[in-house]
Image (cartoon, rainbow, N blue to C red; front, side, top):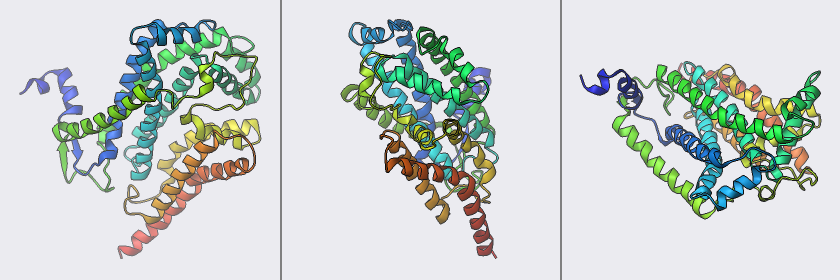
Length: 383
């Protein structure tokens, strides 16, 4: 027996990376998972380097970032890699979720894999938000103020909870130090969740684009799929390098290149682009508590899909109506992202409300109704 199979540690790696049987019909959309792993490793590596030079004191936070950019050897590269890496992380994550929605990867027996993925998505958003705040630029300060103030909408305990999170009566030094401590800790918890995600995936293996069992034709992970993953890794690194070296500030907000000033409110509150769809939902609902509930419910809705999708066949590959509603959902999500950066004025208010209604109706109404209709058509066609 070869060493990769006899050694207990190598055997574990071998079972995941070399001999793991994968459906031969998997397309390039399945490569996004490996890109997410690469993103996590890059973020943790660059973040570790930045933490060596960062000061979480409110008076020094912004200047310590500038010090890294100007005085530390290679500091500008690490900072730009970390900042743009967060955006690329979310690009890959949205693509990965979109792939799972289209191909029905959330259906039994992979419900646990899907649930772990949604938990990781929420944890990544929290980590990214705190990372954005600890730069302590102008948008960082007001982003932290607005988002933490949302908790005051909670009945009974909200107004008491906000000062506890702040560590005072406004976003101040204790807030920055808490956010930095959590921003450093959460990626390690995220890495543990990734391991659990892979363990759950390993139980039943990957799904496939056709929506039927993959047991009819499987191939080992190495070398075909490993090489296929490397192809997308090279394309990813090329795109990532173009942003880091030639356009590093494109995905950021200009106001965040000014030090945080509690005395000056920005003209418009705009979070990072990957939070914009949920921010648009928050603003679409006039009631503060209702907006907060809608924002969190929008993410938790993903957990409902294994229950609401009644289809007997996995994925939308051969379903015309499901494809139509899915693409409308994607365009609606992009519309919400665009509305999130616009001023709260006519006609964007009403448009945001309609887009929010469609977002929730997709999970609660369209998926169960359309999947049930397609089941009837499927049974009629098979008679």
